[in-house]
Image (tube, rainbow over all chains, first blue to last red):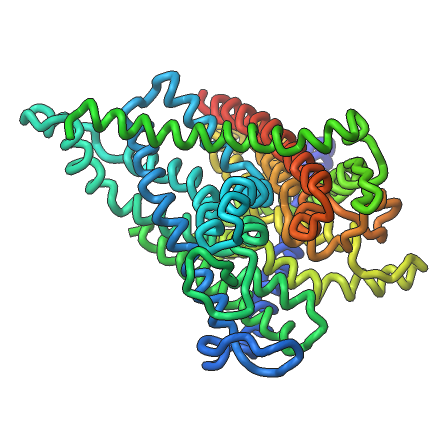
Length: 281
Length: 290
């Protein structure tokens, strides 16, 4: 009881501390429960429609119950293959450019361009690739969809690969150069292999990122109710199927949209978790 | 192969990336010219969008975009800041911290179209009953539904940016403040937040950039009307959602060109916001360095 002014002040501060704690814990609780709720609803609604037919059957005609989404699963794989075949070499070489010209003015410009590309809304990528690829080829195609997705992947992969190249100790390069190895061989045979796991991670995250994209596909790969293996023809994809089915009036199709959503989430998640656990090691 | 050729190859890849960016801008400008020529400046402020009479004013969608993004930010900012502060300052158990981080990362990686599906099946019925109870038109879809789902979509992103900004505040500052006998709240609001404010604001800007360009979830929830939205329960469209819903069914070349113009507006806005966000981010990182 030495000083009532101080104990009073201390109590007031202590109360304020508790009020603040409540004021941030309550909203955090709301956020966390909302996020868990969404995840739980995707899992519960989606798991009801996962069966063998779902994976191996094609879509049934309008209004008929049954069938599956194999055309979308195959279509998604096709556009992702095209995308990665384009994005991996370009992003690796562009990242090597950044590595070789570290700190130069041109490299900084390229870095700025990469960050800007990363911020482009994916719908804009869709319309531009429509003009660049669909209009000249006169057809929607898996090829056009893949190009659109490769542009979604590029900025992410360039910055991730650049980071993993930068993490290779510079003594590796110096040692190789000191032994008289030409610079390009030192980079290709020493630096790139040393960064291989990072490049692999970048590829995985690029795929995970592009797999869920819908907007760039609507005007490029377009969608297709039938299974098609032709890269120059329209193909379906899992995100397109979700978008299309949920607009339909059929309960069975809504159910399938949830199934496709769960499949997509599981695919993206397992890629992310796989990469996450690799990183920790 | 020799060093020279190798360098040429790398330079070529770098040029490809720069050309993609320049080509985007070029294509959008050229393709939007017919519509812009026809409408003039009214393309930006005209309030009528009618493919039949070929009047193309972007104002309804500019307003729709600003409304949904503003409402989404207003909802997301307090929730994300709270969650970011809790994760960055209050959770000490390593286990709980990694659980929260994983949850946030998982939600950040869920595709937009899945949020759209969830919104249609869960949020729209809720908004519809809310609309009925206040006597508004019971569409369910509309500005409010789109904004709510948009808010949920940017929360994971914004809260992890906030958390990171706080974690980057120099530990010595915090320890010094505790040593002076400050309460946790005083340390957070008086020391940590002021030091992290540039990075946090950058996180908000980058989230805004995402919200403005977000397409699928909004397209599925906003009701796709080409009028200027007048209330929370109005149907509407954003720049992105009108492109997604009309581009494949474009009625004429001018209609398609007008949508390229909308894409150009979107491209330029997100580019400017992204640039501001990154500049602030760099400034924020500099401030922690002392």
